[in-house]
Amino acid sequence: MIVYPNAKINIGLNVIDCLPDGYHSIETVFYPIGLYDTLEIKPIENDKPVFSTSGLAIEGNPENNLVFKAYQLLHDSYHIPPVKIMLDKKIPSAAGLGGGSADAAFTLKALDQLFNLNLSIQELESLAAKLGADCAFFIHNQSVFAVGRGNIFKPISLNLKNFYLLLVKPPISVSTAEAYSLVKVRKPEISLEENIYKPITEWKNLIRNDFEDTLFERYPILANIKENLYKMGALYASMSGSGSTIYGIFDEKPRENKNFKNFFLSLIQLA
View 1 (cartoon, one colour):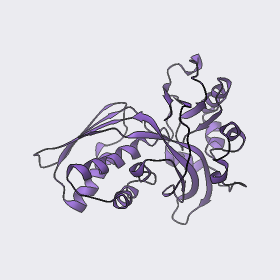
View 2 (cartoon, rainbow, N blue to C red):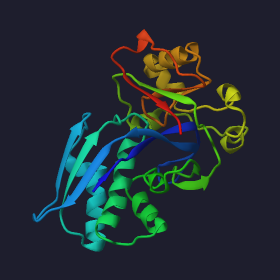
View 3 (cartoon, rainbow, N blue to C red):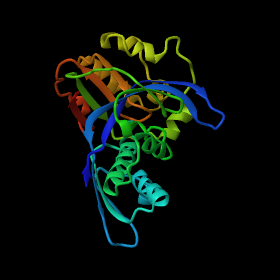
View 4 (cartoon, rainbow, N blue to C red):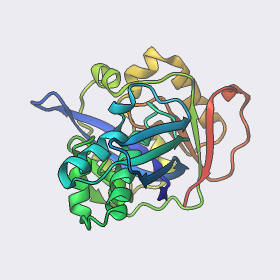
């Protein structure tokens, strides 16, 4: 079975409180986008599962990868047999695009189909939530307003069809732990849930990502990318999540920018 886990962007991200368990309470909008990994899973007659990767580099031990953890979770709960998993990475890691979370969620969905587990959407979301705060989003995989740790979802009607999205990631990575260790907690005067329905031409002055304040100081290149995106004509530009990708939303296909040479770039027409 072959599936294609997709990335997401965050439109706005407000860190509004520190929780007793050490996590943070946030509000954000998750919006799925057309940048895909390729994930192939097939049963094998081995004693143990086999996991391999290709494409963009993935840091860390394979056994700590969320794809492997997703398999292990279903193996422990439903005793599924060993499989061979091949992951071809096109979504950069530590980029704020949710690639690892998407891979894990799609692994759960693929294994559910492959072994006829007949899990409900709610059961899959509950399993995905054990793997990471935003993993559950990719089960339903539609735009949502997210609160709590980013794991409580409310569907929203947000249509960006035919806009162009330009993703720009410089050769640096920002871990979630690093981003949260620096962020300043604040509660916005107007909720993101209200601002997201205002015209996109007004988002620049209304919708923000709280991680930008401190991460732009530590990594000035990120601020420069955002500035360049606006110079190119972006209606709205922002960091996605807590990672190092900056994106711009355009109403016309943007021209190439020589300032982005040697960066990861992806131009997507939103659906």
